[in-house]
Length: 399
Image (cartoon, rainbow, N blue to C red; front, top):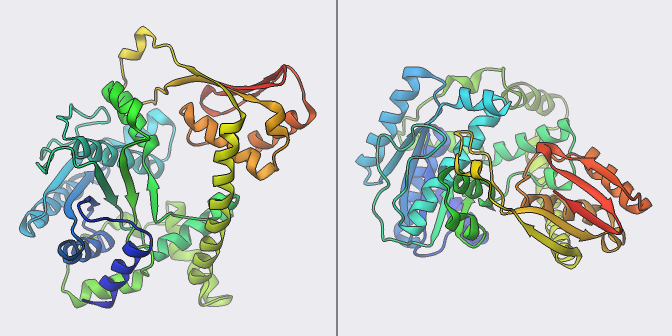
C-alpha cells in the first residue's frame, strides 16, 4: 500500500466517511484527481468492505473532446470491473436559464445528477428520465442489491482545492462558515429536494432528510503534487481538461497566478496555512451550527405546509425546488435573545426548510437582525428567490 492510499484510508477512518456495506459512487471525470481516487478506492474496497461504482458527467461544453472523455471513462471503468453510469447535460443552457456562470451551473448539475443516481441506488427504485437533460442515456443504473440504504458519493477534491476555496471565499468576503472550506462529508438534502421536484416524487420530498446519502471527499488531505506523483509512478494516463489551464475562471486564476505569487513573495507554505485556517474555522462553525439548530427548534411556532397548485405538476427542466413548507413562524423574543452569530445561523437554517439554500448575504441577515432587535413591527425584508421575512406582533414569518 502506497503512502497516498494509506492517507486516503486514514482520512476515511478518521472522519467516518465509509462503513462496511456502503455503496460508493465515484465522480469520475478521468482527470488526475479522480483517476487517482479511482485506484485508491479500488485498492481499499476489499479490506474496508464497500462496493464501488463510477459516474461520469458530460457537461456539453467541450464538444467531441467531452464525448471522447465519456467513452474513455466507461471503457476504463469496465476494464477494471467497476460499473460506470454516464450522463449528458446541457450546462450552458442551464446556466442561461438560472442566470449562473457555467462554472456555477456545472457544479449544481453535477450535484443534482449524483443525488439522482444515489437515490435510485439507495432505494432500488426504477428511475424515470432526469429532468435536467439527457442523462443516463449511455448506461442504465447498475444492479446492486435493491434498497442499499447507505450510499456515498465520492468526489476527488484535494488539499490544494481546499486552499483555493478558502482563499476565493476570503477575496469575496465570507464568515466562519465560508472559512471552514470544503467538508470531508456533507449531506445532499438540497439536491435531493431538486430531484424530488423534477421527478414529482412525493416520497423523496418527505424522506430526503432521513436518507443515508452524502458526499464524501477522501482525497482532501492529499496535495496535488502527491496525486501527480502517484499517477506517474503507477503509469496512469489521466484525461486532461485544457480549460483547467485557462484563466477565464476565478478559481483558475487563483490557482495559476495568485497562490504561486504569494508562495514566492510571502509564504512558501501558504496552502498549508489556509488549510489550517479552514480546520480551525470548521471547529468553531460546528459548535455554532449545533447551537443554532437547537435554538431554531425552540423558536419555531408554526410550520405551515405548502398547498400544491395545479401548475406544480408541470416541472421544468431547470428543476426549481418545490419545498414542503410555504412559511415558518418564529418567536421574535426568542430570536432577540440570541447572539448575532447564532441568530444568523438560525435564519439560514429556517430558510433552507423553505428551499432557499444559497444567495443569502450578510446584508440580508444584518438587516433582519437589526429589525428584530429594534422590534420594528410591520417590517418586511426581501430575501433571494422571492423569499421574505416579516415581523408583526412579536412573530417573525419567513416565506
